[in-house]
Length: 294
Image (cartoon, rainbow, N blue to C red):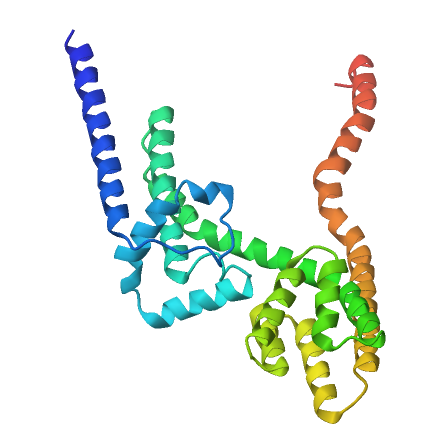
């Protein structure tokens, strides 16, 4: 009877605590200024649930972080194409939330195991805190791969449009309509928006190169700016750039094909060779055992 009463009191206390936390978060969310996301990218589905809490932590806590650190985080978000989704304070708040939920997961894991292990209370929050960085790094890798894969096609479309008589802005607009999906659609759209708002073409292209921070994009931007300054044929420069980017993509594919046998050595040694040796040695071992050698 005493244990049942204790469990009931514990359950009521936990429920009351959760209710108080929920009401407190709701009250704090009302005090946070409303976010205008009309011109921002949509959030991933798994972030929608945590976003009100993210906004509260970013507004009350992360805004006190030194500006130099916030600037470095903002630069990373720009390079990964997330600057139109969240600001630096919100990204840091996501790291803190991930660390907290990793700590809660560690607590329940230790409770289920039934054996106290203090290392999990340190390791899991640390993994949770750095997981958004891993997610950001993965996004960066996918973005670079997508840009390098689709850049030759976009340069071909821009070249054909320029040769057909369109100006550079019109050629980029046509390339966005006909080109493959990927980060370049968004980036060229930002370039067109900057140019329509009065930003010079060279500066708009340099902004794109700075956001992406990819050597091939920087080379393309420098070639276009140099051709514009020197009065060279824009179509010829674009065709050379397209051919060069296509050759580089082919060389990257050849490099990956040559690296494949080396990368296969590990799985062969660890998994395939031992299994093969076991299959071949088993009949021999059986014959030795039946022949009385063991």
